[in-house]
Length: 288
Image (cartoon, rainbow, N blue to C red; front, side, top):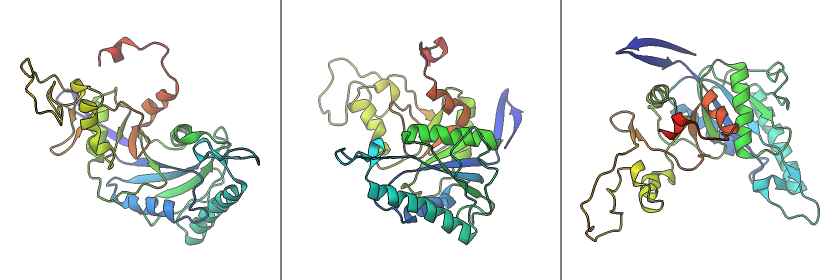
């Protein structure tokens, strides 16, 4: 839900609510649901109204006797498959018994996946947030599980933005900049999603400059210096233009050079465009 006003020839959008997608898959912790419970509970740190949480359960393939287990490819043992099925049942039972979520296990996004959902209040994160569980009909992996969830959000809500979460990543601090991040995406139509800081991505700026020599994307180190360089360059140091984008007084955005699969905030329509790759890069993107 959004509303907008015009100011200084620009449109200011206030986002009233967002949806959340949590992708889950077979895990050694199954059939225990504490892992995803902790993630859901940590959404209290996300300082914007959460309208609905969609839990997307990826599918799996049971390995044959002589086949190697490869959980990243969805190939798991029969034992883990049984635990995963119990995990999904436990999740459904827990939410129903505690009155914290409605559950739906419809596997077809083309049908009314929410028609039989017994939705109710989710007290663990936001006062009037509801939860539904949806199973992918087969193993699709994290990226296409996200696509599966985005189509549900687009079909059943008016939300333009969605927070994508892994089932084992929790928020430890308040995220107060959600509106500012969405303002940045509203003002910059080329931004599809924004990855949130993790212990890995906090070094992204340094990696851009040192590992990949993409100095034009960061102001971390003026070219041709690097973080471990103590020599004097032959030619004068020139600070190249930076692609960093200020968000507020304490945050700024940097271009991502890899697809981001940890917690990230996405513009739903733009994100879905990722799954239909360009055969030729359009001129308007070449100029960015």
